[in-house]
Every structure is written in C-alpha cells, then in structure tokens.
Length: 397
Picture: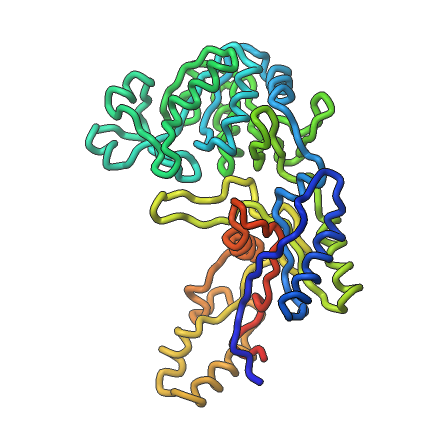
C-alpha cells in the first residue's frame, strides 16, 4: 500500500531525570514503551533525540555562582571587569552575571543595541532613526540612553533588562557602570580586563580586543572550562549553553556525550534490529517573526550525534520539477516522471537548479530545531523525541 504520511515527530514521555540516572536504559525503554502503547514500530533511520538538559542533569554537570566568582577572580584579577555583549535573558545569563559580579569590584556592562546577539530587543531601529542615533558608531551612557529612550520593557517578558542587570550587579556587591555600544574595542576606554559574552561571534570579538591592547580577554567559554571547587564544567564551552537551576546554581551544557548517543543506537539495534540515528539537542536555530528572536542561545544545536546525521539534505525541489522540467505533464505521468528524477538524482546536488530553495543547513540543525519545537521548554514532559520518516522522499513506500 502506498504510504500516505511523511515525517512524524513524537514527544516521548520519560521519568524525571536525576543525577546518576542511566540515560541509555531510560531512553531505550521509554521509546519502546511508547511504540507499544501507541501501536507503531521503529524503522531504520528513525531519529531519537534527547534534550541537552536531561543529559547534563544525568551527568550532574552543575556549578554555583560562587564557583563562577572564584574562576572570574582568578582569571581576571577581581578589580574592574568589562562585561560585553551579553544576551538579555533571566534564564541564560542573569545568574552568570551574578557570579561574575561577585568576582569583581566593578563591572562595566556594555550592552549591544538595538538588540542582543539573538534578537532580544532593547530598542527598535525606528526609535534609533527618530533619535538620530547611529548604532554602528555611537556610544551611549546610561544617562543618555534614558534621556532618549526612557524605560524599555521586553515585549514578551515585561522586563527592563538594563535596570534588571544593574540591580543584579549591585546586589552582588559590585559597582556598576552601563554603556551601550556595538564596537568591541569601545570597552577598552574603561578597562583592559574583559569577559566577552557573545556566543556565535565570540572568536572575532576576542581577536579584536586582543589586537587593540586588552590585557585579559575571556569568553564565557573560558569560564568554568575546568572544575572549580569540585564543580561541574564544560571543557569546550564553559558557561556557554548554561541555564539557571536555582537562584545560586547553574546547569552547564553537557560534557562530552558521543558515547551516550552511540550506546543508545547500539541498544536499539540489539533490541529491535533497527539502525536508528541518535542525537542530543539544545536550542533550535530559527527566528520568531514577531519578537525577532533567533532562538539559538546555545553554542551549537547538537553537541553530540551519531555519524549518520552528518552533512546536509540532498533534495530536489518538487515544485521546480513540476513547473519546469515536467510542466506539460499531469496526473500519473507527472508522478512517474518526478519519481524517476528523485530515484536517479546525484549524490551531490550543489549547484543544480532543481535543488534551489531546499534548505542548505546541517541535518543536525534542521532536526534539532524540529525537536526543540516538539518538546518545547515548559511542562510538556517529553525530553525525548522520536522522528520517523525524515529521510524519506516522494518515492518511499
């Protein structure tokens, strides 16, 4: 019988994960129990995905704000520290800022404007235009910012992040000065010890600061990249990808977990005879057209995945074929012609006009985004995702 359904994404419920739990068994048992309960079977090339959160929790990869403070003080001297280009987030950055401020006497907080790196807006471009401000060159003090723009609360959270971050720093016992600028080297007018908090542009920012005379530059990936006071850590990403756990504790991005995804893949093969792909995912990579937020606050969408998820899609655009190559056909003849084109397509379609408009992104970014949208970030209780049919096409029975 001809298949009538393409890609299916299912959220899989599992027990609440605690430190030390066996994620291999929990994942495999949860997926197989869901299959039995819902009456479906696993297939080759299904994708099983786990949120980075449950992986880090099972690893016990946590740290305290005091751990952050001790590392910051050791690496940057504990005097005046420039903190530049943070994202505006109560969950992602606020608690890190608390730890940073505890490790300094003064924090010069330099915020990018009109928005942060992932799209959280302080201002609109219309506001800048009306005020005659050039965000590429103008540096604003807090006083000038308030004079021109007043209080600006985030559209979704209702938080004035300028005031919120200032109070976090002061409550941590440090003096605070806030400026608004988009050129990294601006911070060197205030201090030569800097933490650059940008995520995806961090390498360039470090290079610019060091080339212009900075004494010490640490990215968030350089803080807690090794244990402090016996804390958790992430050797590659440090504080990047961390989340608030409690008022004084963070959950870090998972440590190396390639062995985990391979072990789950092998267990599924042993129990079902099916060769599935497995990945760990964090934030998806997509933009909200209303709030203008680009979701990806993690350093990568997927920190670990099995080898079958490497690469990018290799797909033909059906509507291109229908409207161009086979514009004179319809019905069964059109279906047969398109099917033959798919079956005979090259292994690499880069540059082929019939593939234009297909999504030129890494498979893990695409699948991870689908997983993130399926699991959500609230109380759905489905931190494991099963995706079926992702690698099927129009010809798959």
